[in-house]
Image (spheres, rainbow, N blue to C red):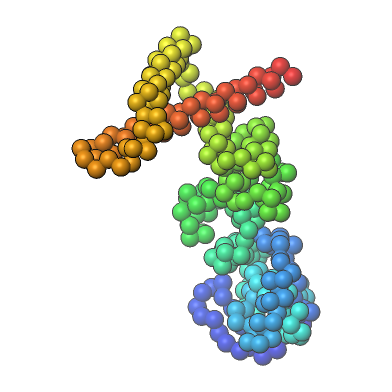
Length: 305
């Protein structure tokens, strides 16, 4: 190991912590297993200007590796320091192995919110595989997050590779990707097409619900006779309401109603509000029925093909 310059401060009693020392930038190398893969050029340039003006405010964390130092965390700061023209930078040195270094890299980046959604999902997934083989609960404890947070992050690994790439490139938003990841891989293209054509988010959510229903063996679909009878009652009721309103309140009558100042206005407003609320529920049910029909039709077409 080429000797770095003067030690400037002791970092404390944590067994993972060593000393902060000045290290020539040329003796530092990135870790190929680093969870963070993407660095925005504009943001790097902005950070470089900040370093030129105010110095490096947070030190990269490195570990000894053969005759060099390998980054654990702070690759963005190391890159920006090079752009700023620095020849050496202060670093926290931790004498840990590659496995511990990866854990520390995830924790550091996650706490600083430097990881993008797919990077975070892949990092959590690696911790749950060999050589770490951590449980969901152990990952949550290590990351200082709830199990729900970790589970939600891991959901993105259910995306097809092309949609993981779409998330990385910003074609899919994080929220869209999380919803898409709930859908079985073979049905994800249907939802992705809805996103691309700008379908209403509520319509998309209904189709996702319908897809999950179709694939859930626990959901019992009512028999055809029962659904036909319910549909007939609903049609008659809706037609009756529409007919009554149409006969009683033509446009001129509704305009006159706007001038009414007597009678139980509050009670009538309450009843109209209740009617609107119930009709909105019916409207939502009809839209969900349309989504179910679309999904079942699509599934039938695919099986026939």
